[in-house]
Image (cartoon, rainbow, N blue to C red; front, side, top):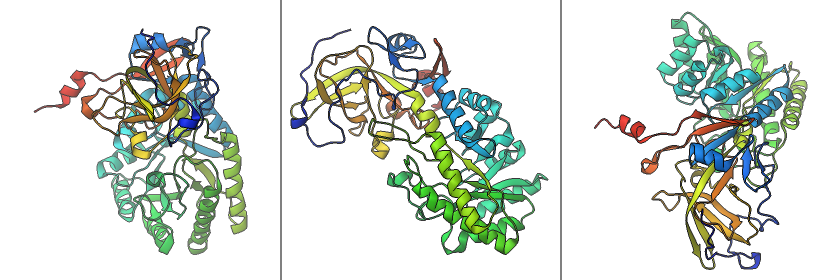
Length: 463
């Protein structure tokens, strides 16, 4: 592997261009435990390892790019959420973050429930043995076929997202001779402090039934009248990548107000409230996420306080962490290819993946960390932009980060915190093959989602 130095872009803070980055770290070889999975460490020879296997060995066996999941870390995070909320609450893993049959089995074994939002996610859950009564089915436009399959399977709840869906689910359940447990998703007018496209509780968006104007109250009236439905609660979700609970406090106040109105009008106290997910993780050292036990304590206190003020029995709480469980457990491993220094600006480091395996930087302006993992380096830090191999100027993996100035083609670099929304949103743009997902645990590595092949691509092309 070549170690020849390349002319570098800016290295010193006093000559850096404006951008989204902090000052160079004191030591580029140090791995911040906030952004890396728990078993990730550097071996004595400077190579990074996960689950007891170094990345050189992993790259040789599985190739690059590839996602590597720390199974022990995933299980520990799942248990932490389950323990934090206890037996009087429900934790539904949000499958949209990343779902595979291995993930479903881990969730089942660790005692978590599962939230799905498509027929494909439901099929994956059922095929891996998740009990249907521990599955919640979301989605703003569920097809009749999807609803029928969910009702036939006996899913524990369907989250109703529109007036049309109230009637649709009731009709299908009645035709099958059953009553389907449902929640109504309401938009409560709380806009989380997050990116516009992932803030999901303000009224001007596609999800839920607005609380404002009495629409949510009317949805409740209709659901309570239909024999095919058993209304068990209200659902609210205020956004994603949230670091404090102030937004949840406002949302809970408004949802509990709706529960009070339901009791006063219908004489019914709904037994459940789902506060959704959206709790953030550390993508960079600047992020400061809260621990599950802190979140559980805060949310439980908020709901109990609001219910006490409204003279309601405290409902059973549900939450839906997805990113908060799987996000920090994985990293994406790349091999460095072309290196292009731009004098006075930065150095462009091209890798063998890109926006097809991580669209979040282009889609959400997301920030990530990156590290040289196949060796250590004492070279000066250079300001780098990690980019992919796609024919697209927006093909950026890490917008601004510091890497060693002696970085060379053939080096391995890794981007941490890619467990959520990277493989699940991956594409075949430019007909690039989607990477595998490899679970690593206690010195063993196994593929849980295999790498695509050219045969896979051509098999769908029937023209």
